[in-house]
Structure formats: structure tokens, C-alpha cells
Amino acid sequence: MRPVLIAGGGIGGLTAALALHRAGIQVRVFEGVRTIRPLGVGINLLPHSVKVLADLGMLSALAATAIETEALVYFNKLGQRIWSEPRGIAAGYDVPQFSVHRGELQFLLLQAVEARLGAGSVETGHHLAGFDSEPGGVTAVFTDRPNGAEIARVAGSLLVGADGIHSVVRRSFYPDEGPAVFSGRTLWRAVTESQPFLGGRTMVMVGHESQKFVSYPISAAEHRRGRSLTNWIAELRVGGEAPSRHDWNKEVPASVFRDSFAGWRFDWLDVPGLIDGARAIYEFPMVDRDPLPQWTFGLVTMLGDAAHPMYPIGSNGASQAILDAAALTRRIAERGVTAAALEAYEEDRRGLTGAIVLANRQNGPERVMQIAEERAPNGFAHIHEVISQAELEEIAARYKRTAGFSREQVNRG
Picture 1 (cartoon, rainbow, N blue to C red):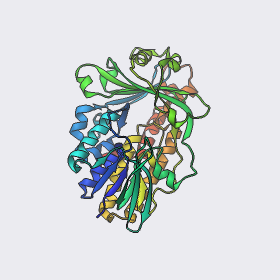
Picture 2 (picture 1 turned 180 degrees about the vertical axis):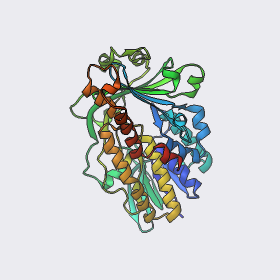
Picture 3 (picture 1 turned 30 degrees about the horizontal axis):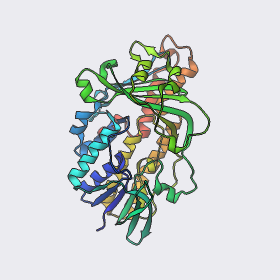
Picture 4 (picture 1 turned 90 degrees about the horizontal axis):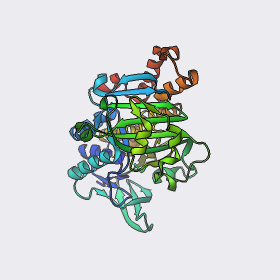
């Protein structure tokens, strides 16, 4: 049988390769860059996605690299605590929540794919340029991205577009969709070596929807040394048009945004100090895309950011790509390498991920920060003067249910 072709060697594509291989399905992965390096900044893996990775035998490798996140705390712009909750094992889940460097996670998955599927199972320097559907299969066309020369035509049983927010697969079915939808907010992302804060395993979010700072540790090795490799994101509402995609992920000086956070020094976190300590800072527009009416077209489908790019709110982007991979594999194992399997996978996932995209546009669980800003812009003596305990709990619980990671949902599998 022809192999399943996966376009994209990111977190979703590599997880899908591992899951499909374990199910006895031949897979080939194609990645546009010539050399996959552990690049990027930090991400969170919620317990439902960690459960998938644990089932794939990745738990010990993750635990050796990542931080087991124990708590999430929201603060207003004055550093006053709004809401806190335990996370992962500390919250009674069967598996941890992890904070990890995106590049290190991708590299762990790549190593596992190459070890289990064999050398050459991930072909780099192969940018998907297009594909042709035919009875019983798909032929994918790959080019060398720097010069655009065609380098391969590969026949497969299915094609899975795991090729990110600028997906070629998505654009082939929705050629008039246009650019990603800009929120009017810009993100500056970096990592800084620092002192641990709030116990060394805590994720914090400070501010409101127009000005926010997110920070959490991502390195188990630094934690063992009594230090913290701290991932952080500074966010500001800037308005205007989104920059060209060619300007995404560009390195910028701290002076571009630092003054807005100059007064954010708290007894538990020195925000200007983190900004000043970064070796490199990268700028991104905060974008997503509207939920699609259809992902699957015959023997071609999408997963991860190709299918449902979302705001980085609620720690769901990478986690949902991993869940896509698990659902895709489950349906192929049940129904074979068929269009019916892809349609069942889409039925499982499209509505759920679309709901998360829309929830994130309303700030998801971070809505508590915006409520505090709107109701008490000058601060409060006690948060319950502003937001009741019941309202805080319901906002947190509602988002967990929407995104599929309430404790009950995860622990019962």
C-alpha cells in the first residue's frame, strides 16, 4: 500500500507520524526546511495532549526536558492576584501539564520518528507545492523552496496537510481566503535566564487584553540548577494592518515595546529585568483564521494550524495539533486508509477546534483579566469585590470543557 504523506514536520505532523506508525500504517513526512533545528520559544502542553504523548512513549523524555507546571496565576496590571489554580498533577490529573521549549519538543519528536520509522522517514528540503488527487491516492509535488525547482513527485494513499498557518493544502481548497486575520495586537517573544519565581513551576499572566505579559519556566535542567529558563511574551494592542508574513518572527530591539512595561516590577516578578535579559526578541502579529466549513476533500485533509490556527490564549495551539493526530490515527485504524476515515476524523475535530478559535477571540480563560480591568482599572482591595468566586470558577471551568481538558474529561480518557 502507498504510504500516508504528511506535509509538515512540526509538532502535529511528527506526532501524527508516530501515532500512525504505531497503528501499523506506513508514513512519510516532508518538511520544507533543509535542516530542522530546535528553534522557537516556549509552549504549554495541556494534560489531554500529554496523555497522547505518554501513550506514544514520550513521557520520560518530556519529563527530563520540560517543566511540570504546577500552577497558573492571573494578575492585574498592578500585580494584584485575580485568580490562581493548580495545574497538571497538582490539580489531580493523571498526567502532568508541561511547559517546554517548542524547538526541543519538536527535536524530541523528530528523534523518536527517525528511531522508530527509520532513516529517511522525514525528508527535509521538500516544500509542498501542490498535489493531484486520483482514484485510490494522491500525488504530492515538492519543490526546493529557495529556488522553486521541482524535486520530487511522491505517490501516497492519503495526504495530510500539517503545513501551518500558511498551509499550501488549505490554500488549494480556499484560494480566496486571504491573509490571516489580525487581532490588532502584537506579540514580542523571548527566553531569559533568570531567578525562579513563585516556586519555579508557575505560569503567570499579567495585565488585560490590550497589554499583557505572560511568563513561565521551560527547562528542567535549569530548574535542577536552581535557575530558570523563562519564556515570556509581551503583548500590546497596536491596531493598524498586520505586517507582511515575511516580517513575522523578525528580531527586534527591546526599545520597540519596553517603555510600556517599564513600571511592571513586582515583588514576585521583574518584567523589565526579563525583557532586558533576553539575548534575542522576536516579533509576531497575533493572528488566527476563521473556522472552516470543511477540512477533508477526498483523500486529503488538514491538521493543526493548517486546519485551525488560533490565538495563543489558553495554551491550546500545540495541544490541539497533538489531539488532531490522535483522532486522525484512531479513525484510520477503525476505517482503513480511506476518505471515510478522514471524514470521521473531521467530524470529531472540526467543530471542537472551531469553538476554541472563537472562545480565544473572547479571551478564553484570560477573560478574568479583562473583567478586572474593566470593573476595577485602579485596582481592588479584594478580588471578590470585583468578581465573585463563582464567576471566576465558571470562566475557568467553561474553557476547560470547551477545549476538552477538564480533569474528568482527561482522566476518563
